Image (cartoon, rainbow, N blue to C red; front, side, top):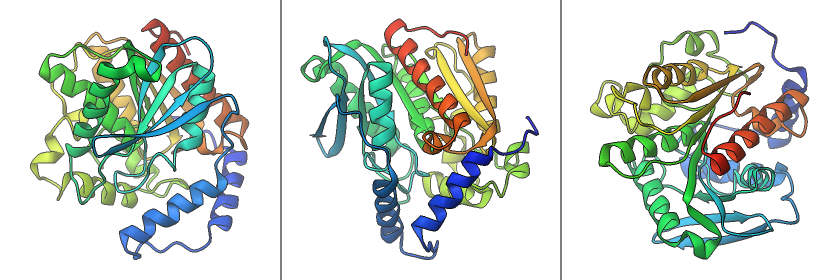
Length: 318
C-alpha cells in the first residue's frame, strides 16, 4: 500500500461538499439519513450528457433507470449496482456516474434500486440484481441491449452486489457475464485488515461506518451471513470460472485490501483480472472527478474498463 499523500484537489472538494451539505447526525432516523443524502447528491451531481436517452421503468417491484447512448443499437449492457453502504443510495444518488459511464463507454447502463438493509439483509440485494439481469437478458433488445454482451459493475456496496451476482451465476450453473467492474468494492468480512486499521478515519469513509454497514447487511458479527460468499465474496472458496474482472482500489480507503484480496483470489484461480490502485485517492473518489485531475484519471480508467469488457469481453493493461 502506498504512502503517497491524499490528493489535495480531492481533499478540497470533500471539504467543500461537507460545508455545502450542512449538519449530519448519525442518530437521525435512517429514513431521514436516506432522504438527506439523496437531496445532497441531487444538488451537487454533474449534468447528464445531453445526447443520452434516460428512461425509468419498473421490473416487477424493482425500479430501474436506463441510460442509452445514441447510435446503432443493440449495444452491450451494464447491470449497475449503486453504493451507499447497503443502507442508502439509489438511482438518484448515482445518476451522474451511470450517465457518464454510458456515454463514455458506449453502453446501455441499467441502474436499479435494490432492497436496502437492515430491513432486507443479504442476499436480498443479489436476488434483486439477478431479477434485473434476467430481465435484461430476456427483453434486452427491446431496450437497446445485446443480451449476449452484459457485464456487471458496482461501487463500494454495489461492488459486493456485482461480485455476488457472478458467484450466484457460478453456483447455479448459468451462462457467465462477460465481465465485472468493481469500484472500491466492499467484498470482505475481515475488519482487521491493514487498510481497515491504517485508514480507520479516512476522510471519505471510516472503519466504524463500514462496520455499521456490514452489520446492517450481514447481521451481528459471527453470524452465518459473515461467511456467505454472496454477502462477503472474499469468503468464497472457489472463484474459478468467474468472468474477466477489473478492480480499482484507493490507497486512502479502509476497503483498499478488500479489493486486493479479491483480485488475488481471482488470479490464483486463473481468472483474468486487472487491479488498479489510485495511490493518492480515497473511497468513492469518482465523486470528485470534475474537481480533481487524479480522480478524473481514475474515472476514465473505469470507463475504459467498462467499454473494453462490455464490447470485447476481455481486459487490457491499465
